[in-house]
Image 1 (cartoon, rainbow, N blue to C red):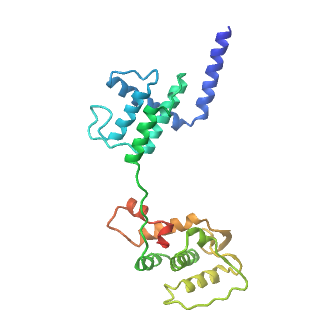
Image 2: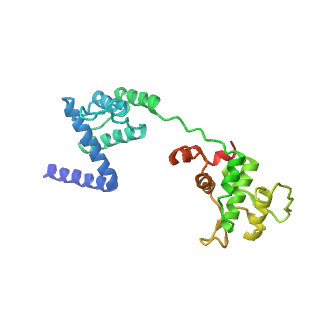
Image 3: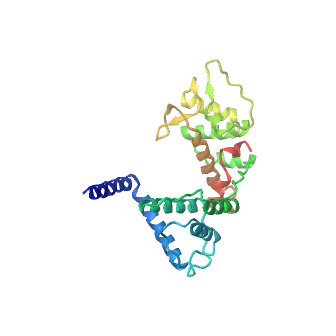
Length: 261
């Protein structure tokens, strides 16, 4: 009776553990296990109990790009993040079967470290926005309230070489007086800022705030710096900058840092 009670408790605990994981995660983990079990069979090995040596070979196969199975030729190597996810899936599956997988075992840790050194993607160097680029970008913006605000953000950020967090942190005070002296109104950051402050009726507090959905009213809520990053990416695409590249690569090249670069 005691053994039966213990088994029921184990089953209940397993049910709670399953409920804690999302359905999508469970599906991914089940697929990870099926993939590994098939790989083991192709190698004449068994997936149970866990063998750090076999798992290390499996991870190396996933990263090789030659395909983990003979029927899979010239498959693309998996990314480091995907391989780590596969390893997490194996660890979870082993735990459900009463085994512990030591990810720090040298056969696993050494292979994983080598994969990271060889296959981890270097950070993409953000491309600088040139003067002609910023002109093309602001030309894509409308002249409603939201467009006035975004034009001021781009021109001021570019002229000052400001970080996106610095841009959205700017405040205006009662004692501030406009001191215009830029070039053409369409490209002058001072004029753009004055236009925004005038039509948004801002004379105190955060300079760059949100607008209503119809773009006709300014709110009192300071913009998040993520808005600057999204604004840059959107106007880069709209202006056709680096149109020789695929859209994904263009988006990866430009960020909030591009104003400063």
